Length: 80
Image (cartoon, rainbow, N blue to C red):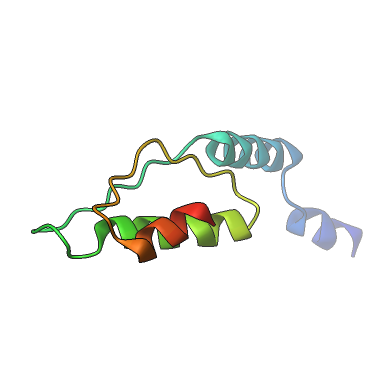
């Protein structure tokens, strides 16, 4: 019976490699690009809305530059 359970156990080296691979992937930054066919379709708004959701999930978010074009709603999202 003990031999049956030994076969079902995962390989510790394989587990360690998997954990290390997942840690490397989690530590890398991510770039998300928002594309739109025309001005005023909501790219900045969508980007800031997504950033707020990430920040609410305790994920660091960096915004480099946002052109507000006088839109108060977009500015409100940027201010948090």
